[in-house]
Length: 234
Image (cartoon, rainbow, N blue to C red; front, side, top):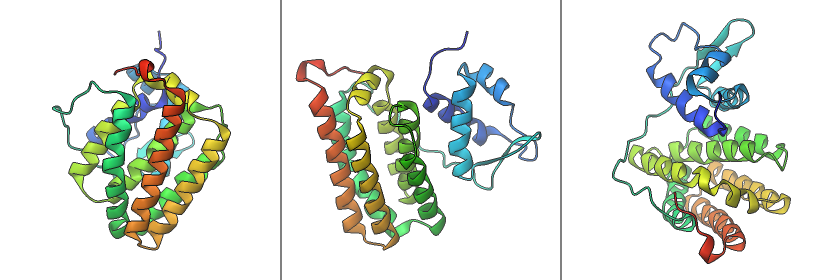
């Protein structure tokens, strides 16, 4: 029986599979095989493959299968010592310390390809259905991770991945959904667009400031829906 899961589980496991795939001329397993292997739905597999295809990690050919693209995803450092027990608001505090710095570095180091990818990811987010929380979280996380990769520091990328994994814990899913509405999504999209413009113009301090503004807006949305006595732990 297939377990209920978000597309993040499929995406993370497919990233690991790509790193282990030693014969790039051979296709990856079929969607059905991947769904069975990872105990997720085929919809989640397709959505994860959509992200990997946009990132250039894989390419798909009708009737032939899914093949590795030119670049395997960066393998982040595994930080086993990072505490896993935390509140969602503590995670947001940590993001506010980390991600503006990543934006500052990305404004200095992002390649044209990474900047173009962030634009495509943002365009994809703009056309998502408001009530499709799985898609919003999948593509938003891909956007922020691409920026983290563009910062060009594997240790910071490892920290980002660890925080992102904690943030997406299923015990907080209902909180994240309650904190999301059309007006907030529109505001987040505008902030992403401003952030991209600063990255493209190589303005580190402005990029860091917009990232801070964006994360503070996310933090406030959580505060609005999460009473102090209702802070679940991972």
